[in-house]
Length: 505
Image (cartoon, rainbow, N blue to C red; front, side, top):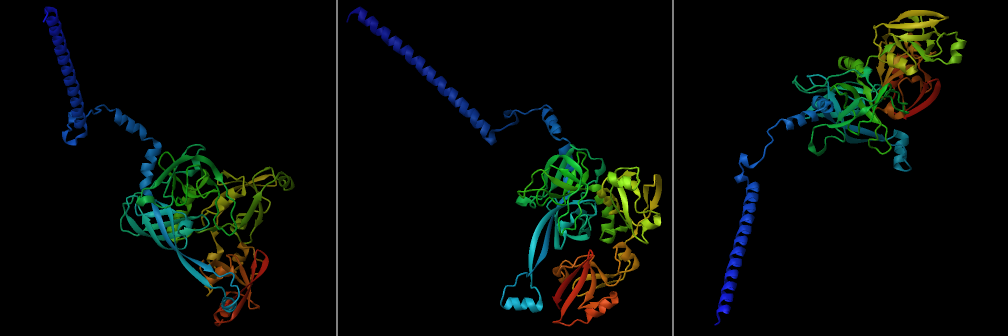
């Protein structure tokens, strides 16, 4: 073999050896790097290999600062009031009366024995606010009206039975009591609803649709005070009077009724009552009863079980410019007295029809609802200061309301679920009754026969079976002498109109 061929072969061998060594080294480095990464990954996900040094921890106070900034006024208010908001589960029995018997056996039963009644047990939910450590709860009357069994669920999940202490359908408020000897229940602070500002935060706390997913903690929704002093036009057949209501866009849904409307200070400023909606869901127009109004009835509900209304004995209406000119009144706006009852507190105070009302208890009145708001919650024996104008003179008078005369009149409860009162001279004056013969319907039992017939509070029963009623004893004697199978024909007077009502005993 020639020398140059030998040298070339050696060079090729050396170059191959060099390249092989370099490739081997590179492959080894790559494999080492991959193994290293696998080891790190395994360490991160292997909890057994974790050590304090394996995880980076923020040792600064930055996290604490963020947490503190998250706890704004809304969060704090919800944390303060939330434990005092409860879920109320109610069992009721609804009574349905047959209205269209058709023809056949049902028709003859209907003809001889009257409408058949059907009963069905129903369940409903609402919310409430614990107002003192003994477990008294403020809620809506419509949440618990007609209830037979009440269950109270706290945010802790603890459940108790509840009982109605007092309720008032007109104000749509009720007070319940948790049946327990505990005296350390969480309770909410009641604020002041007279100093609300349009646009300030409003926090609605309640249990919409009950407590979902077995979670007893209430739902918190946030909005603003949209308006105040909203008067809601009453619906036919409803006794609730919603005046000077708080309007809010905080979401209020079914089950929120009776829950708390709270300000940014964590004070209850209203009791959530209802919403305006076309979709059966929240549309940003909700209403709450001002807490200051609730405060005026809470004591009555706890002490007597009902709101004790006072008698003033006068009626008013809004002044128009032409009316002011005709009555020679200096004030062209406000209210004027239209009628004063005989023997009434207003009469005794020296108030006359035609007097213009400047203010009551230093509060200027612009609307009839302002007057009703004061009078509906006036207390017997607590004086009211009136500033009036009469023939260009300014008068300052003191009016002392009395208890309703009907509360002192003799009463009788009949077999039809009617509570009747004698028409005394003061009762006649109060109800503007010109003829005191007959008896006055004071109360109608919700599930009684009288309610099914259509009797209403304030009706005057003038005759039974064409026999004129002279008074309470006369009515009692006629009713107690009725025998099974007899038909009864009532003639009643309602707001000056006469009506017939008939039933078989």
